[in-house]
Length: 366
Image (cartoon, rainbow, N blue to C red):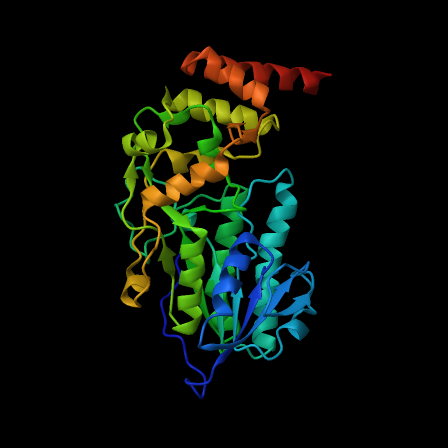
């Protein structure tokens, strides 16, 4: 499943300044985006829409639940809508996140078309390409979407993509551009992939070929701005140029590796997920095992350039992760993390996982 690249039709007067609505304006990505748009000469007004009022100034705030069909009244007067309310963060309530991600996207697209919006830009993720052993490096933006529907975040993203793919047929007067960032980093970003760097050791699966590529929130905001101001057709991949090999990642972070067999890693992750110890599905572990590097061809052609290299983005991630500790994407206290680090090595990490599994089984029996 892929998004067809088609030109975005400009309005009757291409020189007229835009009124741009941002849905999810109070989120981390939304705040960074709104801050750019209010300084953009091509934008006359920014309408900030979210279920709670954020702290951005110089905008028109319209507060509403993004799944409410009455959203159409909040988008009145907008020339373009940028939907960044797709939630990629770790949560204890996966069904609620899925409902929000899918229903809000559906509502935004329908409401935007009803309000006469000419161009909708929707944030997704490069995760939809899938992390597959035989992926080329880099992936073309029009590459097939090979991520498996897993009932979690990946399923959300695939459904968001499907809604966007169907929208031009349902709403022929509105063009839709999908934007797919690589591993997102920045203040307020808390995903399975960022928590990978909160662990005392970096998990490496034997036989895997991890290739790391990042996208800083500021670069994503600049890409979203370029997409709406330049009326760019998609899909648009957003990332720092190139990628980092595992050895480079370890050198930058100062973290050593825990190298485990594929059968143990995915088998243990499956058990932890079924027991409710971690909300991360097994499929999400593939993104730290196999390559999913993307090329930013269309944005590059439009003149966009990432300000953050992969090295700088990873350094920023480590600063945000400072003082936080996680194992298998689950936050743990400082005492537990110190014990794991002090006891040294892969053996303790494996034993610690086994202890967690046994405790969870006892709770279920109890």
